[in-house]
Image (cartoon, rainbow, N blue to C red; front, side, top):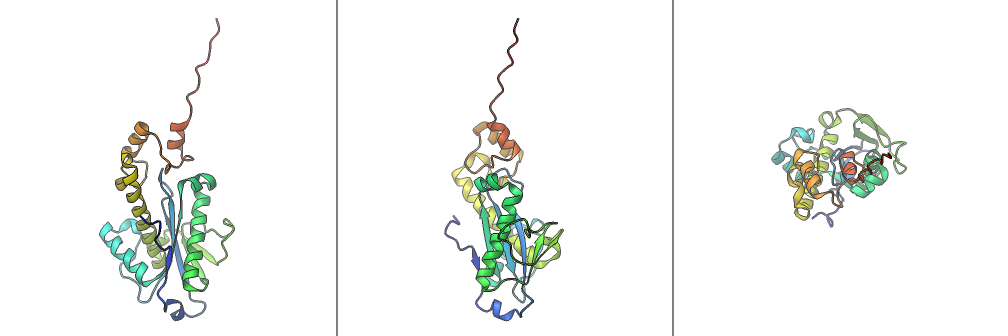
Length: 224
């Protein structure tokens, strides 16, 4: 569904209106915890005036998130990065998240035509020193998606993007209920995993999936 969608965008005059030293980008991710599907990161530089009602995406109803998502992508500078399940298994989820954040910031910088002066990252760690491609000043803010509007905007973009990906994936893999659970380990998803086994979009490095693929131990032979 989104395979051909652009991964960044920027209104023509946004970068020109931002004076040197004042370009702030917010970064957040969606999908660290699910058993299936990608982790998605988004980076956003806000327009002025910024879209109203920005907040942690988890606190917003779906209809409000959808409206804000469209406004952010139309009026602000943004970049998105998607790291699929095989890459998550290769890097581990922390490394994949750091990589996604790095790629998202690189894309918003490309859209803007200039590097950000500061990147605000939701959480207690930034990719600085943890991902080879990271090259911008950064500050981690715990609960930043509810405190910093640019991070809140990034959280909305990341969640909406990932939710669309999972809804599309559910059409090809209807057993797991991803249109409802988005790949998280709900009872519905775990029951389907036990009945049907994992598919190519499951994260093999996550315990509930890995345990299903472990061969049963042979019973110990007891000699007389």
